[in-house]
Image (cartoon, rainbow, N blue to C red):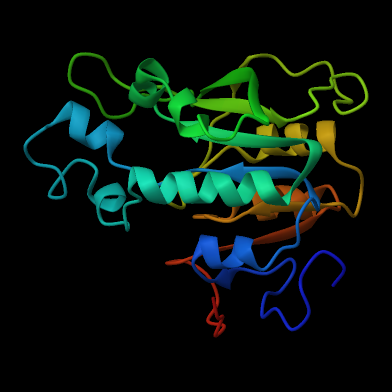
Length: 228
């Protein structure tokens, strides 16, 4: 496999059961045009503080292994390394991280710049106390050099995207949106990475538009013995 180091025990177009950092470390420098990352953190649960978290509300979400800020930063360092120059990171964040800011995550990664953001309207009401959640947010970052015309082919993607999805995972994501974004920045047979794949919606998006998927999840996937 051209983009993976020799003897890497990672399958392409497969649900690898592997720690995402271990997966990223198997990929050579400057190989990918697009990476998706949905950090598993407790922002939404901690801020809302229902008092019955893990019993009624947010049970499936709170049961997942949580990432510390340090772990998230380690992922971003590796993602910056494996991205090609002018490659894109699509970073999912909740409204509390959006308000408090994620820019500090990139303080020592000056080659990564926020270039856009998309609001995903889930078209259904979710958890909430003061207000009920209906949206998630996708921050778009580009690795230097920042280029638009030659790296982004589609110009009909709205910055508010309506898509209802069937919940197959605590972090189910919109396949049609991800297909659009992948199509905008890659060509057929290019590789797209999701190192914390969750419900593997990025894999499904890649399959539908003839891209190659590299990704896995520490909790969800097929059993393959992978080594750091």
